[in-house]
Length: 490
Image (cartoon, rainbow, N blue to C red; front, side):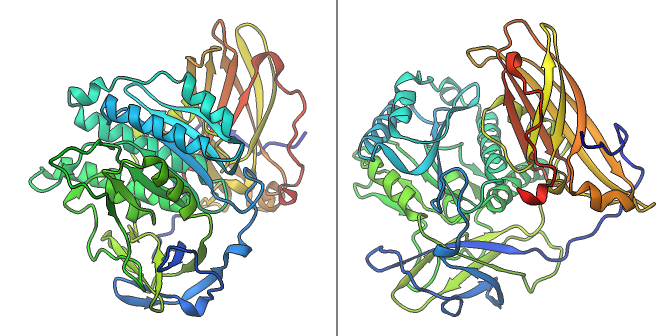
């Protein structure tokens, strides 16, 4: 069994920290011609990237055929996350949206071209109805079994709570997909959280909302999640009869907002162009919109640059891409150079939410062995050392701060028990290279409530926020670790 580096619950007095003055900006770019067909065969020289109007040097370029294979889909196709927003959408509008989603799925082949997950946000929870699958009929069955939730919180207001819970769901999607290579397509069907006008708000409330938006956008961008909000609100005679599509770029370029798109008004529609997607309103052909959103990112170019602006300001930076006439590019319209700070309560909530939902978090690979009796499960967690963020202590030792969440569930998915622990993992500098070839080992004990049918362990790197999760049957916990001795072989 691999040796474990010393671990304790006390953080070191001081660790070496580095003030970031630059960051690699990664862009997934969809390019089409005037007929909406993907423009293939482009090279690095066809793209000109501008940040706040200043040219940037493209440091890496990847054509569609060069993308790595996706372990979930088994090919280069991006995965889809379908979300039904029952928290913020009228019951009648959501019923229509659900019927349109069913219509879309029925038009697909029995084996979907892109692996898709299905989730729902309602008054009480953000719940995964089905993890990634290519089984069309399974998704149809999941929709049939799901009982819609009456949006009573929307009917009674709850504006702040709905905003918070919507942003938290987006953050969890980002955390759950960051370990999946390549672009991810998030199709959000629902009105979205209530729009908030920031003008006139007191400084504290405004800062809280701005920090939440900053954190959410940067997490989505880091995870390479492209969002397509689809508002299913039914049209009436007072609304325009033509569909309105927000975020379409100009020919020969990608649309650019010179200022922060969330500077004065916060709404879900802005998340489309902010992440490189599109936002749709007042469409009665939602099935076609879902189809076009899924197809939009099937082929894309990836490029990166290091910004010439090395300042530490927090101002939103706008991105603009120029192409030759006749081509249309779509990518994120900018980014925040500095991440909003996380409070202790936000970190705790982050891992609790990861323990509650059933998304397959993979950014921190872990495996678990152990045994259980009717009251407790005694387990050993093997954590991929290379996936953790290590700091250098004043004495030269390497240090990582991690957090573990442990939860048990009943057969119907109800959480019966949750507990969390913090661990500081430290190893001498001389042993660090050897540590990278073996897992960090933690021994934990979890209380088992009566009727527990599923255990979930979540590990969070407190520096990066990356997480890994494992689900186990208490009656059949593995006794032998399946993790390779050398992580470099993975």
